[in-house]
Structures are given as C-alpha cells and as structure tokens.
Amino acid sequence: MSVERSTPAGLTFTAIICAYTLERWDDISAAVASLRAQTSPVDEILLVSDHNDELLARATAAFPDVRCLQNTGPQGLSGARNTGVAAATGDIVAFLDDDAAAEPGWVAAQRDAYQDEQVLGVGGTVLPAWKAPRPDWFPDEFLWVVGCSYAGLPTTRAEIRNPIGANMSFRRSAFSIAGGFDPMMGRLGKDAAGCEETEFAIRARGAFDGSRIVMEPDAVCRHNVSPDRVTRAYFRRRCQAEGRSKALVSQLTGSDTALSSERTYVSRTLPLGILRHLRSGGRAGIGQAWAIVEGTALTASSYLLARLRARKASAGA
Picture 1 (cartoon, rainbow, N blue to C red):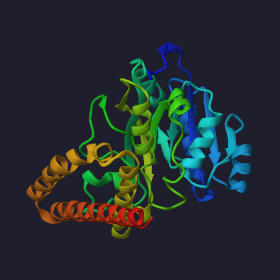
Picture 2: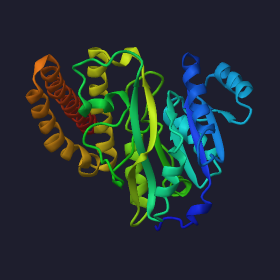
Picture 3: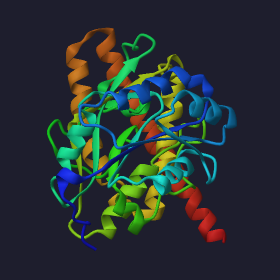
C-alpha cells in the first residue's frame, strides 16, 4: 500500500507524552513546557496516564491546554501509546518520553522530513541529560542503554530501520493500516524491556510499499538519565533485557529483519569503538572498551537463551 499523500505544509502535528508515576512530575512538566515552546506550533498535545488516577487528576488541573487521558488498554507503555494514537487527530503523531524535553526546533525538523511523501516515520537525536556524573567507563556506543542516541547512528538525514522510542513520530495513517504497538512488548513501569517501536516500525514499513523511516538529527530532545541508570547493575540488566526483547522481535518478524541494524553495529561500530577506547589509554579508555565487550556478551547471550527457550516451548506445544 502506498503512503497517504498530504500537502506537507498542511500536515497537522499531535504530540503524545505517556506517563505512569508522579515521581516524574517535574520531568512531565518540563516535557509539556518544551512542546509549548516550539518554533513550529504543536496542534495537539496529549498526555496519557498509565492507570494512575492521581497523576491524571493532577495533570488535568495543571495543564488546561493539554488533553489528558487515562490508558484504556493494558498497563504499560504500548497500551498508553495506543490510547494516545486512538485519540490523536494530527496527520503526524509524535511521541516524547515523560522524562525528555524537546528542543525548540523539534517539530519543525520533523515536519520538514515529511516533505518526502514516502517518509512514514521519523526519529530524532536523543541527547543525555545526566542527573548524576556520567561514569568514566560508560561508552558512547552503549548510550542506547539509557535511551539515548549512540555512536554509529547517522549524523545526517538517512534511512533507518526504527527510531528511538523517546523521540519519534509516524504518519497517523501508519497506525490505521498497520495497527498499533504490540501490548505484549514495551516497558511496564520501571521494567527495562522494550523494542515495541522496533517491531512496529518493521510491521508498518511492510504495510506501505516504498515507504521509508528516516533519522532526522535536527529533531533534538534531551532525555534525563537518572542516578539509578548510571550503575553497573542497571547497565547489565538493560543489556539482558534488550537481548530478550530482540529475541521476541525476531520471533515476530524474522531474524533477518529484526537484526538488520544490529549486524552492522556489532561487526563495525563495536570493534572500532573497542580499538578507539584502547588507543585513548588510561583507566577510562580500558573501562569503556571492557563495557563494550561485557555489554555485547550480555545482550547476545540473553538473546540466544530467549530464542532457545522459545523453541523449546514451541516444540513442547
């Protein structure tokens, strides 16, 4: 199916923030404020509360210009996003994490990318906003662990398989044809699982002949990295969760499609990163090189174990 054609200049823009806890109230307020401050105005802001009545009531009172909704689907990020999509009226439906803030040109950069009528989705740059000192062992190649753009991503507008969930948008027509995010995937509260945007992007692109998903580096947001996410324990847990999530995506879409980006990342980006950090020398360089080795091993072993378990379960059934 062909991508729905609209006049680029007339594309309306809905921004969705999904939130689940009042612990992030200041972050949520900053996210809303960043959308209000866009150089290219947002036509509609939706805030979806993930089964938190107190949060919904407070947001409704605090943000009179924001349409605040309760998640009507299963608890979790996928259900909340689907609730927002169902309520959205914009031609473009964008997602901003509740602990992220968009730079003033965020909307304008995304709208510009949609001038190409074959562009079905757009991902932007996610810069880390460290709320605790960044560990000297934390490599740029693994910034995806904290939901941010990592070394190896395009630095100019280019086609990608899927965007980072903290900063992404799709044409609303993509959801009308391909469906929504899989509620069996995605984060639930502080759980480290994810990849629901990967599975959706693969499925949506398959539903539209000749469609493209692109990285637009000028669509920038800053994503808070809380102190609990700069520990070795979180790093390891997140790598293992990523492996499990990728195994599920592979099961749903096939490993060739699900791991297309990872093959280049593992075969080129990571080896070059190890060499670069070792050459830089010192404790930090060695620590970052080791983190790449450890993170790769944890992710890969978790992926393989999850695939093995799935095959055994399938054989048993």
